[in-house]
Amino acid sequence: MNKLLAKTLYGLEDVLEEELKDLGAKNISRGRRSVFFEGDLKLIYSANYNLRTAVSVLKQLHSFSINKANDLYIKSLKYPWESVMSVGQTFAVVPVINSSLFSHTAYPALVLKDAIVDRFRKKYDRRPSVDNKMPDIVFNCHISEKQVNISIDSSLIPLFKRGYRVQGSEAPLNEVLAAGILKKSGWNMQSDLLDPMCGSGTIPIEAALMARHIAPGRYRKIFGFMNWPDYDQDLFEIVKSEAESKIIRLPAPVIGRDISARSISIARSNIREALLERDIKVSVANFLESSAGDSEYTLIINPPYGERLDKQDTENLYAGIGERLKHGFAGSEAWLLSSNNDAIKRIGLKPSEKHVLFNGKLEVKFLKFDLYKGSRKSRG
Image (tube, rainbow, N blue to C red):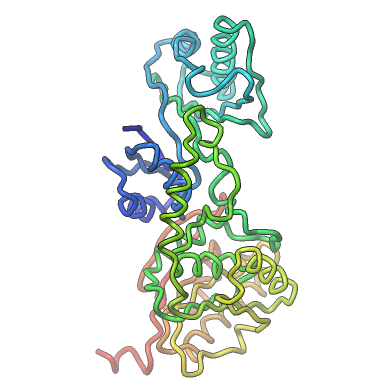
């Protein structure tokens, strides 16, 4: 049984834990921006192929303690690196360092690289090359004070890079974050989903993938485990076949709208690449002039945060969003993602749920608004 770690974005640890339970992972425990678990080789393949809220999946290789900086080299040199890569492959080391033993966080990566190279040189009189741009193998070196954990990245390319995005808008939403907020919202995949400011279409695409049970790894050509000596292509084909067998028809409409014709054009390109043209309907529309009509939606709104608009325009936009929600979408349920706390206040609605997440380096709030028909008092 392999000791594994799935990395995620801050605030999505709980939904990632649930995903891992559904895949049959064992001994699951949450960390910060991560979830620890155990599983066999099939689970490594399945986690990479099926997880929506993981950024990468790491397999622990070597764990030990050190008392001085040079211990890192001495103990790393003893590990059989030839069992996880060949001398003809390239590799890179990603350091995550929080230790007083090292004054420069990049230094441990150099030490580990030297240990790996020297191990191969002594054993084969040849050495593998380091490639920090497009390596075959990526090792993660995590040092917390005196504890060292070295892992191998089974994903290689971050899992938010699904493979369906051919174009992005000015600020495309990370696919893992999009899937995470959809799961946080509790959307039951039976109600109509509307993203009225859809940009390049990430939220509608992730929603359709979830609702149809399409694995996000379906579009990817490369995973890190494919470069491992024990890669079992037949086993991976089984993982893919099992995932394909779960795909269903879309239970309810998924709709994307945006005021920008260019954004809708980009969204259509990405939707086409994801082979979801029959499932997602997108159109040019101004949310501030729209209404639900006879429908009741689950709205997921990711408005501009104000980086490219001045303060007054941003606050006016959010005030307009609040007005539309109150008067045009009564009976629906709305979720809004934003980092602009001052603008959020202009919505004029009290959120019934609040979640703190991160969009890149920005701390964002993910807020739920219940849009009652009639007054709230009349309901009670």
